[in-house]
Amino acid sequence: MLGLRPADYMPQTISEYEVLLALCKAAPVLRSSQSAQKLSRHLIPYLQDAHIQAFAASPFFRKIEPSPTESLSYHVTAALLSLGVHHADVQQTISHNITTFLSTCARATESVSQADEDDPSALEDAIRTATITTALLGFLDATCAQAEFWRTGGRLALVSRLRDLLSQSFLVAVETAFSTIRNSHSHDRRIREWKRWLRHYEDIGRPLGAMLLQRSFMWLLVAVTSLLVAEEDALRDSHVLDVLMSGVGLRRPLTSKSGEADFRSVEIYATVAIDQMNYLESSADFDSLSPAKQKLAFAVKACVLISYLNASTLNDDAADSDVLMTWLEDTLGDPSGMADEELACAVLKSMALLCRVSSSYAINVSRLLPAFILRSGAKSHIVTVASKCLAYVLQMLSKDVVITTLYTLGNVLSPGNQHQAINGVDSDSRHATQDISHLGAGRPSTGSSLSLQGSGDEELSMVQGNVVQAICEIASTCKDEKITGLAQSMLAQKIVKFTSPIDPRLVVGAAALALNGGTSEFRYLLRGLTTVAHDAVVENREGVLNAAGSHIVRPLCRKYKTNWLIGYESQKPHLSERPTGLSPLRHLLGALA
Image (cartoon, rainbow, N blue to C red; front, top):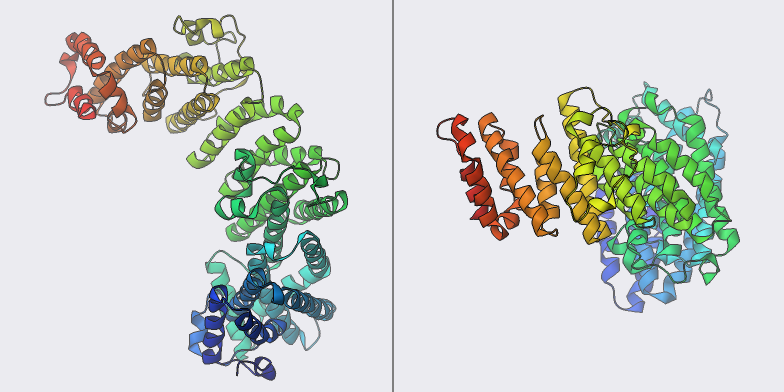
């Protein structure tokens, strides 16, 4: 039972397994050093043999998620790391035994890597390789969650050791092993169990194979490099990219010479990332992968980008930022990759943050991001991130660039310019309200180079909403009264002059900006919203009517209800065409309630 080596290589019963997991879950709450030492002595043998542990036949093992081997490895590793973090007197012993575990796995991978596929013992080799793989998955996932267990040098040694362990030959052996199991016609109980686990991993979106191992390793690389640029407490609450963008929780000074990292360690981390990216580009035909494996590949790529960004932030000489920008631009131009939320967010945020590393990228990025926003088909959340990143980059540039970007996006919304700008300058851009017209007077627009990329009304409407979102984000981030007024005036003009069906997000976006704008812009917008509400009633467009009564428009109505009603009264002669029983007042007064 517990305290011995895991059944001396005898299959583990479900009762022993459940007791073991219960002990692991108790590790974080132990207070005394004596209890920590006692529990670590119990758990260490189970870690050492996790890669060879067999399990007795029991239907209850089928309920263990995601599999008995991975779950055992994960919980034992997590418990030992927790004991080491909270009890310094066991930290060194646990660290030594983790090193021993990895060395044992390395020796085991050497033997399986040399196995001949035509050998009669191929199935045994496949089972052994599969067990090692799932044990490593559990270990890696637990390690990246508690990478602070090691100091800076220890984390570097851990990454280097795992990099050697996950060699090209071992990854090939992993793919061969799972293929052998999948295609086997053997009636052996272990083969049947492994086939079931293979199907289960597929069903939960984690197909077993080399790519899943690499993703877990890249997660660890992100965790390790993130600890060099940000404080542990900040990383517990937020993603490292969000920490870098906010500037709160960063290690000071943010340089490799701060004692947390030196040139050589940053260079090693950057090299690991480069090697992984080269592997992806040379071996992965993303279009031919199954959706689950494609998502894994995109996750690996996202981790590579984040890790390299961390390294470049620490030392641009050790991790050349030009390399990263090339990767980012290539990925930004890949529609399938940018459709993946994890990869898209990593690309967009990394691109914005790289402009902090080197401001020379800012102008180019300020042009790339609007083009991406105009690309039809992007998910709303991804467009939100792109808009925030664009606003983040524009803060590094002059006000002229901000205004030009606003006009570029605003031109695309113009009814007559939904496919191209007129003479390079949108006519609406010339009619900003008097107090802000000087900001853009005579300014050449880049609108002619950007157009709505969509063939149908639905796609065009989607992109229009994305553009509105970007304009609002830029204006709110800049926190400049004139910029906000310009953006608000642009959106109000679009509402008034739109001849095609208006997107509800245009109404909500204009109202959101109006809450922080001037009185004249308010009145202009209110008159426009009255007309929009009337047309929406006539056309029975519930989306626009709901937008007119939304929680964002409602404060606008309450503050300027008199102006709104005056505007409505001025429209009364034109309301005779509305269907009987329908009235825009029902929606406008609802917002005033």
